[in-house]
Image (cartoon, rainbow, N blue to C red; front, side, top):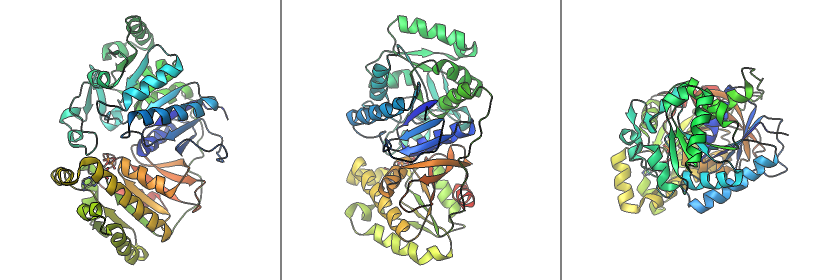
Length: 422
Ligand code: ADP
């Protein structure tokens, strides 16, 4: 297998989002969970997205894992490796975008790395280095209240500079609009001044194509699915390649949804789901105190699974999240709830659930790790950035999952997902 494109994603839902984008652009894509074992039976593909759960861990460990993934991808012929981050640049001053970028840059020998989380079709645009989420700057968006990575600065040149050893510059929209040659010239100029990473503006899909056309000539780039789209278009050059990823029979049996995201979008989706399926709201205090909340949830689910899908949610509004974190600490609360979600997922699968929808990036990571699923073939698109995933090499056999980043999906996301996961 010689890969056209290698990708390292810093969380699992982001990886699905990217794999979905690459598939739509015509690249046959597999998403793996962690660095694959050498004996993983993998179909012939153009791109592999190695999913790590490295967004919110210690920076040194994120670097180590990303380097291992890069080595695996380069070993399969990937000339270009994209480090896939969140389209809202989720990170802190400690990392992990900067430290991982620095390490990949060092290994690649590239003089300068292109960085952009822009993905206009999902409302993420970058102008003069400032990231907008829909109509508002990042620091005014709901991301300011994210439980793990609250974002208080929309200027990505500043944000990246605080977490990187590399001098950070900007390629502005005016340059991007003039096309690949102008971008090349600007990058050469920046590199000559000792700048090793450039945030690059993108407001329209066409900007991503320009960026992809330039980035593909480098060894490494950093960004969200938007730059992935640009890279894929540069590789495919208009010739859509057939994707066989959605092939496979119906799975059937009971289905369940889990929500650990506290994003506004997910809170709205849970409210809509209440109208069509039983919903259990977990008590996060009981989870953290270790009072058997997961067991209670499983018993509740088992009573209902025979009659249709169920949804179990820990999600809460920002004021409740803040109050819980004040009582128990941010990391302890997040970790305990993620592990409870993993316990519930494991119990559900043991009860015969082979169709599972999960909302929340970290939550999905905890669930997929616990289920020990090595990889996924990417299938039909449920919502922008969220494909149906068919497990590859899972011990339970045929299994469908949907892993949704908190902010993604329309109001009816849970029913939309289930209707495509037969
Ligand atoms: P998103 O994709 O929206 O960022 P994540 O699953 O990545 O969602 O992150 C949500 C974090 O919030 C997880 O660590 C999760 O365990 C934690 N969490 C879930 N419910 C609550 C709650 N009620 N209070 C505090 N934290 C919560």
